Image (cartoon, rainbow, N blue to C red; front, side, top):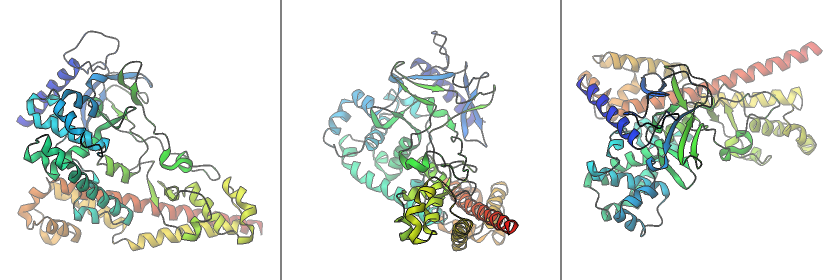
Length: 474
């Protein structure tokens, strides 16, 4: 209770500080309030939907302006450099650093100043740790099970190590305290930049936006995967697709402006779309995932000769959440299963999304279905066992005195990897972030397997439909 009281007092202090910086959710009033919120938004807690977030203080209309953060309140590498001449001078000798490295280092430099930093009140509100892939230990990484996901996590861990090595000399030059020069401190700073910055046109690292970073994530709506139609812009543009956002920096207002992306009832959580991300990308950049992410995908490898048939980028060859194959995957396989001497003549039909023949479509569906089954069989656990494990882990959180003999093998492996054993340690380990990261890994692989399973069902249904229609014609 005492900690909750301290948190509430700290939050009130922060919102008062934010109001002094000109941050406001009441654009119709020029009078400074004791809090920057209260007219359109208020801070609330959503245990099942992102934790701390922003709720509607009144009914909000879609497109209505609900928050404005002036440029002077945005934290950028440029603004921090202007405030600290010694940092700015030191940076001139390290031109090879990326913009994200510079902002992360500048953030640590502000932490180094303690209460003398003009951003101290904001810095106290930042999380002390994150669950991005770079934070995952060896056990949590292996728990992802899928090669692509394991590779992404290992890449994130290695990237953090390399970046720390690159900035170490500069850390010494600006005389950071010893504990701020550690891998733990660098992980925190780089994860803060990765998960909390917002896009600005003048710096690719983005900016930290006080109060604006309280919004929790809402995924842009999924696309209709209708037969014969393109499955949305991702199928055509890949990673270059324009991000769908409901906030941005506006020169006219010299501020970061936020708008209601839909109608909200009073008390309802107000969400922000950071962009279109798969669950693996959400884990990599933000440290969370969505159990029903309309933009999630499962990638399946093709034979090398298949890629040569088309100009699609490999990241477009995937299965959508819900089990529908992407347009690129269908068109590639339809062309592959067409007789070699007809591929040139049928290409136009393929790229317009048309089926070539019942036999061709059955071959395509069978190939995809077989590939999904092979991927599922290759993984060490099933969908059912993953669900049971997650249910069991919830019981562990509730009952810390569980007998060792009752524990699943993977849970015992987790304890062993953390050098913990015996029921007396359970209460301690469940409080550790590594436990939550392991659960995230299980949830990610469960969603991946569910997409493959749904795709098998999709293919089976289509095969049955095609065969039954042909039977009726005969």
